[in-house]
Length: 145
Image: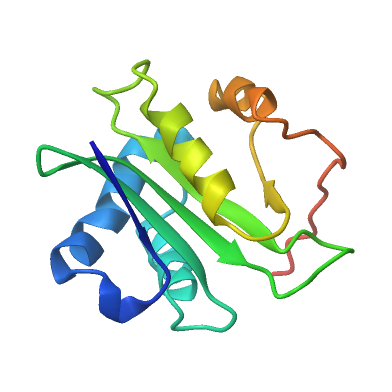
């Protein structure tokens, strides 16, 4: 198993860029967003928007088995410097420690604090708590239509 980390567009292969949004859409299941939103987060992370971020791919025998997208916020002290936007493990590979291994890689690679959003019923919440993520705030949103 190999974990690849990317921080800019030119370093990612076209194959990876094509399969990543669909992989995340499929394996995030009910906890994900639409393809357009996923593509925007990936573009932002790879530096097409400033300040950029990180894309992590876990590949096993040439098969994408997990992926994550982290966006830098460009802020510090009052908002974490990074947000873990997406993290997913292939549904046929869950329970094998791949998500845990990917999370270790993320925490060791990303500079600064990291925030994430997780629904209370999402089983991944337990993994995040094991790594020390805490529920510091209740998020509230106003959807301006």
